[in-house]
Length: 137
Length: 137
DNA sequence: TTACATTTGCATCAATGTTGCATTTGAAAA
DNA sequence: TTTTCAAATGCAACATTGATGCAAATGTAA
Image (tube, rainbow over all chains, first blue to last red):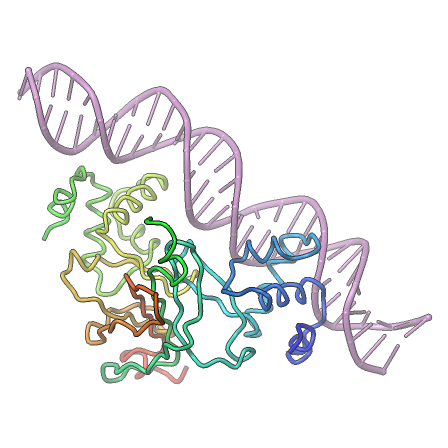
């Protein structure tokens, strides 16, 4: 599905900033930070415009935030767009990348009585396949 | 273990700000936000002092950050201080509290070849036992 | 092409992260 | 207890980021 089709589906106007953000995220191999998106985005948008476009896309659940910690926040297309299952994310300390681990499904945890789960986030941290090979540290 | 003993164990000077922060976190039932800690802290410290004390305690792994999302960040004593096992955290959308779910242990996930896990964070979101009872929304 | 609601860019303000530096303080040595 | 010095504090200052109001520009449907 193309960026403008996604916008149309959510009844959002097709603006170049929104379209560009979606395009950059779609093109990225891994989840990507706000600054990386801004750098790769064509056109020089005011930071408020970028901020509001971003917010709109999040609110409409087109893009999804993956919070590794408050220093490392990355974005990917929402599962509803990619049609992926709920899955864990992997953060690599070496290359700082965040990858979707589609093979690691998240099971509904067994909660104490009275607790109701509606959402689960799981971030696994360590060294990824690629970085393991390279260098000693 | 008392706040000043924890500081001593980590070779940190016993200052009232550090001691106070630890005391407030120890006294709290749940994980607690930076602002809540600041409010409950006796004495009026400069925000830089507070910021640096906080940073020091984090760096020495005395306190531990639980990042629900970038809007909701709470702190608790680190597992090495409380002697708890690695466990999941529960975030309640209604009361905004973060509770340790000691009963929900986190198993080492089965990762794709070459991936090495050193740390795992799991945040379960929903409605907690207490809030389930109260009101319809 | 027109018309209007939405979006943009800019100004602005608040909150927060961070650093440098002179002064104060904790704790170890005398 | 007093002295001593590295470490911590308070303050000023600056950068970054979240957020809002408003006039001008833009997207889209009539």
